[in-house]
Image (cartoon, rainbow, N blue to C red):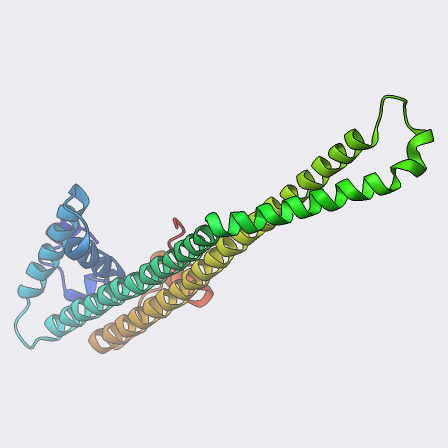
Length: 247
């Protein structure tokens, strides 16, 4: 439903507005009230104003006026529901991101001078143990080694190897810790994303059912199953609505 459609059907009965229009009107209200100033927002506001003007053409208290006012009320509820669910979703996303940031900052604090001194002590300890082990067993291995290899050189090389192994595992441990924090954050965001999709599904279903009832009150018959309305019902049953993924 667009402004041009309403202009072309200015003298048409209220029944020319199908129940599916409630979704179009609701989205236009959402964009007109809450989006930044863009061409899309201006177009949405114009469409809403045109629909309101179309409502006013019907006498107060007439069946057509009541039906169109019902569509407008349902569309407004749909728009408010969309806004509320988007707000809850983005609040959950921000909370997950802040939690991730706080966890990373805590790790950063722990890795300051005190911890690095402790790590350095462990490094020296492992290297020292390796050094003295080689010094102790070198006499038993000396006849297997080249003439130019002495106990000090072998011990230092082994100590350096121990320190490199320790540093490697320390780095892997830190990487896994950060990866776990990031994975937990993404899991929380996916959960919020899924909940948003489910709530929006409920929002569509409520709007669709209310619009059907308003149509049946006006016409005393089932709404026409246009392709758009059939798609709406299928989406409502399957929950196939797009949710925000850019997190």
